[in-house]
Length: 329
Image (cartoon, rainbow, N blue to C red):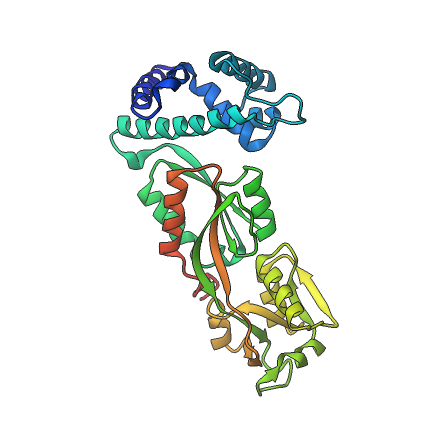
């Protein structure tokens, strides 16, 4: 352990004395390496994944867990179960371990002279719509407010992002409201207005169309792993609409490109692509009934509480603006 880490450890131990029940003072003897290993084993599900995340070996993780169990005096893992399943008392220790790591970050920030200079990595996942609208503003704001933060970014489908969040590979994601599980916390960001769009003249219609008439045209659609695509699929089912010809892609921009080229009609955010409407490359098809708005959320796991991630979700709420895409000249 280097001199700086030892100094932070000493400050951390003093800080912990003010935050934990006296009956848990034995926990002070835990090393941060053991605590960090426990948190990552619990989050990623196996010793092997935790070892990869911490750039060490599986045997080193096993040793840390054995030492940790010897320190607390009871089993942390249920060895009658497959995988790395914590016992009830192990879950209690895990909560304390998470608080210890948060305190470590706080103490390190105090020692450096500014809490804004916390050194850590945050893994953010967004869908294409966020990426082409307000993602740059978010990154600029994070870099200004938290200069010590390293950002890992993933742009993918809603389903892929959610799976990465649940597996511990992402800390927070932005996507449509399509997931409903008890272990996640959500922060509402905005509702996005979608509309039916075409290349001008593709349908040959200028009147308000009953949606039932749209099914005779080819539909360009984001697939089932897309949150917006899932919303549309549920709405079509509720309206009992079945398109005869559907061309599916995972990419929002591919849908836009194919619509502009005249390959079919599509379901697109109105404001984001308003410049294409103004330029005469897209036209909104007026229909009855209108398409429903789609809520977008910031989502993170509530079983891994973090003040920083909560603050990041609130920052996302302040900055989110789906109204103007980067494709605007």
